[in-house]
Structure formats: C-alpha cells, structure tokens
Image (cartoon, rainbow, N blue to C red; front, side, top):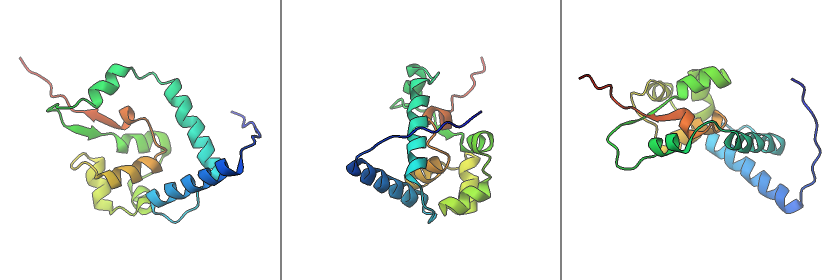
Length: 143
C-alpha cells in the first residue's frame, strides 16, 4: 500500500476551526498529547468514507438504537481494540486516564461506560461506527 500526497488549500478560518477541534480531541483523551491537523483531516476523511461505503444496513442501526427495548446494550470495545488498533487495555487506561479496573469492567461488559468514559475510549479507538462497538444482547430462546 503506497501513501499518496495530496495538497489542499484551506482558509485561515477553516484552519483555525480544525486546530480548535484537534484541541477538543486532546481534551477528550485527556492525555496531554498534541493532535495534528493533518491527523484530524485523515481521520475525518476515513470516517466519512467508511460511512459512505458502510455495509451496515439502516435496519441494524435502528435495532441498535431502538428506544424502549428491554435488551441490554453491550459493547465490543475489547474486540475492536485488539483487532483494529492493537491497543491493550493497559495502554487504553493510560491514554484515557480511566482506571485499569474500570477499563477491564467495561471491556468484559460487567459495566457499561459513562458517557465521558465512552467518548474517551471511542475517540482513542478512532471513532469507529457505533454499530461496530455497540450491540443489543438478545437472549437465545429455548423452546
């Protein structure tokens, strides 16, 4: 896979907005690292391309976000981290400043994350589509 270089021109106003957004991402991660505007643009392009070329049907998203369901919401953060980023729970705990035991409970679906913890983990994992990291646990019916 080769990396191609593309040059773009953006206005000062757009650059300022991108820099502010990069700072917000740093704030969510709370890790003190700097996010470059270039990395933010790459992530944005990846995000929109994955949405456009997504193989996830609207029915799956509707089931996931269905209101009034009795089926518990679960996460696949552990699997996504292992398969797509190679990040270990210890690294995620260090980067997000979430205690290791809390990460372990979230990754094992013992507890679901607070919104703050969800956002920290989700951003660190590259903002994957929600339907890839969240699902409803539907019990197997035995007749």
